[in-house]
Length: 93
Image 1 (tube, helix red, strand yellow):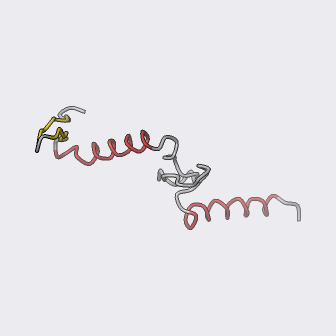
Image 2 (tube, helix red, strand yellow; image 1 turned 60 degrees about the vertical axis):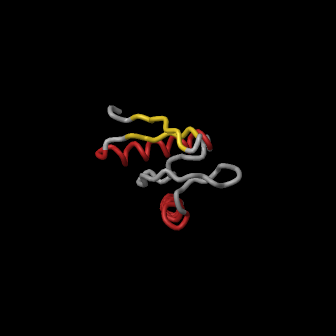
Image 3 (cartoon, rainbow, N blue to C red; image 1 turned 120 degrees about the horizontal axis):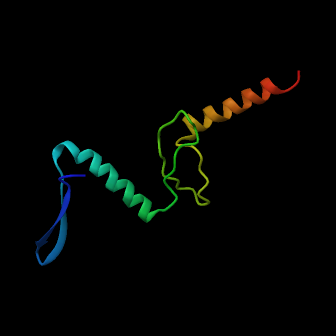
């Protein structure tokens, strides 16, 4: 992205980096850097919700890395209810 840079700054004998971003792009750059940090520090843990109608990308904190939905109360419940309804509908009476 044009106009985005990291500038070295020395304070109290320590090297630190300051991000310079135009105000119009600050949010987008912040989100992109946060996403990259999570992917780097927790590979495979940031994934899309299993509900195709949901646009969230939850951070899977489960030990086996097997979480499927952003929230069991929201998307998980909806998906389970849809599958149950489909099974009942498709089963012979």
